[in-house]
Length: 476
Image (cartoon, rainbow, N blue to C red):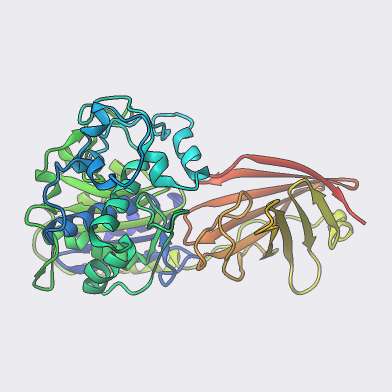
C-alpha cells in the first residue's frame, strides 16, 4: 500500500472527526492512528455495528446446531407470549427475514428522514421484545427492506431462547475469548436482555479482529468459528436497500454491502465502521463523531493498494505516514478569545431550571461545571455531573460518566470519559465543547447570560445531538 496515500487518509481523518483509523492488510497492521484526545485504550461505542455482531452470534448458534434452519418461523421462539396483531403475515416471518431487515413490521427508524418514532416508543417500553413482537405488519415478510432496530433485538432474544444464556454471555465464550477480546461493555434492555441493535463497546483493535474473522472466512487460529459460507458475505443473496443516496447499496445478515466495490461493512452511526475487502485482503476500522462518506473511505482505502507484494522502500512516504499518525495523536489548541468582565460575576452562581440546576466555576485552579438533572423519579430523583473545563483551548478529562446518557453530556458506558473546553463567543455567551471519549458524539453547550437569567442551548455540534433550549435564573 502507498504510504503517501495512507498518510493522506490519516490526515483526512481529522476533517472527518475520526477518533481512530486502523488498516490491516495481509494480516499486518499497516495503519493505527488515534486522534487526540481519544486514545486506543478506551472502548468505543459501536452503535449499529453491533447488529452484525448479533448476526455473527446467531451464525454460531446455527453452527452449534441449536438453530435448525434460517427459514425457521420467528414466532415459534415466542410461544410463551401473547402477541398482538397476529396474522398470517406475522406468522410467516423467518429468522432470515429478521437478518435481512425484511420482516415486514410497521416500523419507522428514520433512515429515509422519518421521525424514528418506533424506536422512541420502544425505548419508553418496559419490555422491548414484547413491544417489537406486538407491532402490526406493514408488508408481507421478504418483500420490502425496512431498516429497524427491532429486528436485531429479536435476534438477541432468540439467541437467549436457544442458548439459555444472554447473548453477551454466549459471545464471551464463543466469540470474544477465541479472538482474545477481554475489554468490552454491552448494555442490557429493561428486561436485562443483551441489546442486539447497538450499545456494544470495543477497542478499535478488537473491532478489527471481528473484520479479520470475516476476512478469513470465519476461521480463527485454525478453528472454524462460523458455519461454512457464513462469512462470505459478497456471495450471499443480497437485498437491495433502495437507499435514496445510493441505488446500489445492498444488505445481508445485518451487513451493509457494496457489490460494485467488492466490499462490505459493519455500519454504526457517526462513522463506527468495520470494512472488509476480501479481494484485496484488507480490513479497515474507523471510529468517529460524524458520518464519513462510506464510499469515499472505501475508494480511498482500496485506492492505496498498489500491488500484491511489498513496494520498494520509500523513506519519504514512510516518514509522511509516521508524522501523520503522530500529528493525529497530538491535541491542537483552539482559539479562546478574551475573558469578559461577566466571567467573575457569574462564577460560582447557581442557576435553577425546571429539570435541573447548573453552576459554573471559572476561577481557581479547577475550572468546572456542576450540573444536576432532576428525573422526578423516586428511585432516581436526580443525578449530578461534575465536568472539568479547559479554558486554554485544550480539553480537560474528567471522571467516567456512570449515570447514563442525557441531553447535555453524551455518554452511556461507565467507561465513558467526559472531556470539555470552553471559550467566550462574546461578552455574554460562553460556549462549552464537550464529548465523552469513546461515545462517538460531540456537542456544544451554549450559555447565554443576561442579568440574573441564563439560557442554555444544546446544539448538535459534531455528529448527532439534541437541539435543546432551557431558561433558568439565579437562586439564592
